[in-house]
Image (cartoon, rainbow, N blue to C red; front, side, top):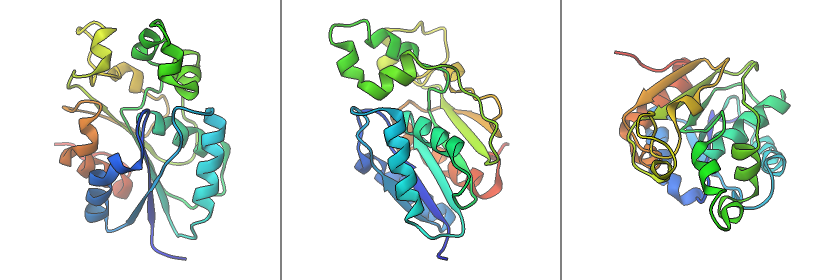
Length: 211
């Protein structure tokens, strides 16, 4: 078996290259090899993305396997970990993931061509999907942002804490190991040194660093 591995997943309307800064920081902070898994977030359903992620993961013979997912990528990770028990042990961190649906997505779908703009997976999981909880054996950490700059401002009152796209309340996951709120927008999470440091800390320690 080789060294521990971190698998990174991007969110909606993104591809793997947006994760470059976060990938390098995680690799530097943990010493673990870090790779990206790209999936067609605008096409296909969640089950297909999960199947492809598991195929990708099983091709790596490692002693530990951790997962980090931004936004929609966190849902792909959560469902993949829910349906399988044969992956190497490890932890997962979800960044700005709308685990309880998305008011912003519900707003987008009311626009002309809104369902097309969102894509199949986002429509099914963020508009029609049911609230999620976690009862698996793997430690799950969630990071939410409070810098309200982004699409969500068009559809959600500024009285609600959000990262500009996803409400803090929408990132809550009953059964998760830890939940942390940081000053970051939905997109800037990918470029934040603090988000990278906290993610690395959770993957190594099983909790976020406080104080």
